[in-house]
Length: 93
Image (cartoon, one colour):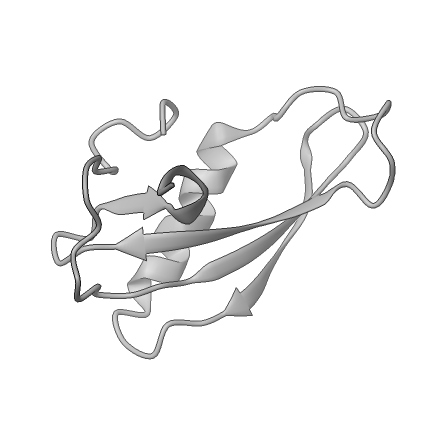
């Protein structure tokens, strides 16, 4: 969220979301992005997929992961509201 000021929201997630893209991010040992894959493409507001990918790229690099077991992958679900602001689902506890 810190890498994307002005593009995120905090607080409760609205009951009706604009779009929910899901990405899988594969990292290199140094934490740089190796590949970004799409696990779920939104059915509407397709531009939110590009917004989510750009947000991940702005947040990189993610730090050295070489001491962690492979594969160096994680997935993230982006919860977009009507203003096209997002909240990562991992932060919506």
